[in-house]
Amino acid sequence: MNRKPGIARRICRHIIGVTVTAALAAFAGPLGAQTSGPPTTLVVATFGGTLGQSLKEVYEPFEKQYNVTIRWVPGGSSAENVARVAATKDNPEFDLVFGDNMTHYTGSAQGLWAKIDESIVTHYKDQAAKAKVPTDDVINYGFWLAGIFYQVKEFEKRGWKPPTKWTDLLRKEFCGRVGINHPNVSYGLHGVLMLGGGDPAKIGDGIAKLAADKSCIPVLEPTTAKLDEKVQLGDYLVGVHGNIRIIPLMQKGTPVKFLIPEEGTIIGTSTVSAVRNSEHPRLAQEFCNWILRPDVQVKLMEKAYYGPTNMTVPVPREMVELGVPNAEILKRTIYIPEKTIYENRRAWIHDIERAMEN
Image 1 (cartoon, rainbow, N blue to C red):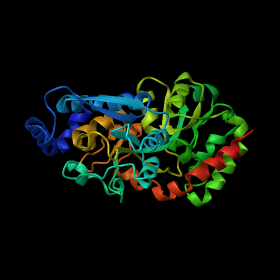
Image 2: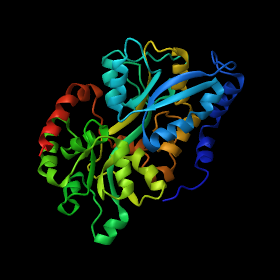
Image 3: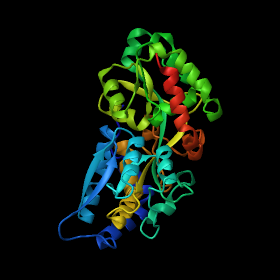
Image 4: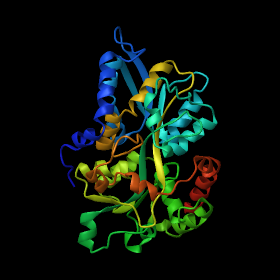
């Protein structure tokens, strides 16, 4: 499905007052911004694949405005990004780290992130309530959902009915062609949780269902980039992935569709955090504020297909049809507290790995 042109223009009519203010502030020059001399280098742990590329694009104006060169360092997963920061805690290697709400809570518990400075991160006040965290050290900049993808042409050719439920992943005709991430990746863990009904107390049911079908699931893919690659190659005809990973593949011509199963799904957020005691603390806070600007949230919606966390930014119908969550969809999602994930994730991963051993 091709996007209709002019989506950004229609959105901006709703937020023109805010964006004009932002533009005037940019013209005046941000307080503390370095505008002359050699550029400052910010080191940012980011994602691989199309999502990482989209983030680079939305930060190109930031680099020019703040006289900054961003050194993007892609990691295999959000958990890997947090682990790299923890390993260099005493002498931080990174200024900022991208991840998701589950893994960044792990960093919060270890004291890895700097507190949000609302005198610099002025758009923090505009965030939806679901996007704010008690620790005030993480910016949730975009809502995402895990759902089911399937190869449309292959399903039509084989006369298969499209999936509608999470348990459809285990249909026998799909044997050997089901793509799911390892539970180290949140999409994979969400899929197992939803096989258990979305209740953390019943994840054992989800693990048992997955294990009963393990001969048909050749591997739990270790990274989102690897799963992206195999979806594009047509190796997997159906599987679990995030809307922010599948929609870009759809837009590039991969003949897949994305759907939220009828039981619903778990809400997730993508995050960015300033690393505590990093070399450039103010610029790191400016970086966090930039990603919450209404115009940048629109770009993230159009380029990376996030549901905006800045509540002043609406989601147009065209984006909802692609798979971008709006306020109504968010009401129907399942929220699992990060603390619950943090306290149980290691045990869950161990149980899933053991259940899937041959």
